[in-house]
Amino acid sequence: MATARKTNVVATGALNEIRMILLGRTGTGKSAFGNTILGQETFHHDNSPDSVTLVCKPGAREFDGKRLFVVDTPGFLDTNMLEEELNTEISTSYQMTARPGPHVFFIVLDPMARYTPQEYAAFTSFTKIFGAKAVDHTIIIFTQGDRLSESGKNIEQYLKTLKGGSEHPINKLINQFQGRYVAVNNRGKSEEKNSVVKTLINMINEMLIKNGGEVYTNDAFVELAHEIDVAESREIYKPFNPDGSFALLPQTKAIVIDGYIKRMSNRRT
Image (cartoon, rainbow, N blue to C red; front, side):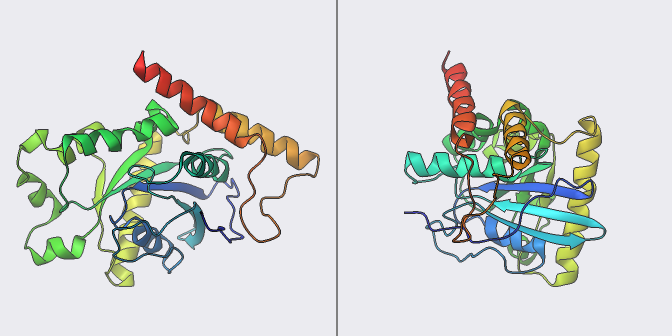
């Protein structure tokens, strides 16, 4: 059973806010990367092959005049969660960033892990959750930067050594996400981590310009934002339950999962 996500951090929708959703398989360093962005140990992580992140959890940080808002997610791309729990967490990630939508999705990969064509298909399946155009708002994050340095290669050199060349699943993903990737050392010193955060902010800004200056949205994000506005106007919206866990609106699952089911149906026809 999923544990409660105790937090008091919410997205503000402010103009200086950058909203980020972390996605990835279990054991890739996804939660540790979230901590790299936030500059502190907000998300629990270890080296276990079992998922540590059981529920969506948000964190925030002020950095260089920006408010960085991060949502760490369970392993949507390889999860063993029950369908009902998965639907709850997908819906939660939507509601946490719905106003007015996320700026970026980070797909976190361990470049030294083994990847098959089937796993490549699993990574691309995140478009079933968030929509096909989410690809235009996605950046690949390669963890294990320290191990790459120890091997005497940078990420570009390492990618060239992958068997299959451009047909290797990792290189195919890079091509799908229009060459946007960054290597990260989650064990680095603060100065190194902050340098990576600055690089990411610049990359996000460039990506937004390419996307017409708009954050990512779809019908579910728009409808959810409206429902939150209505609930607030009636003074009935409270983002947290008494125990500190995040409070989903009663209609959130229906809005999000209906759209998810439609996208799945369209893929089959």
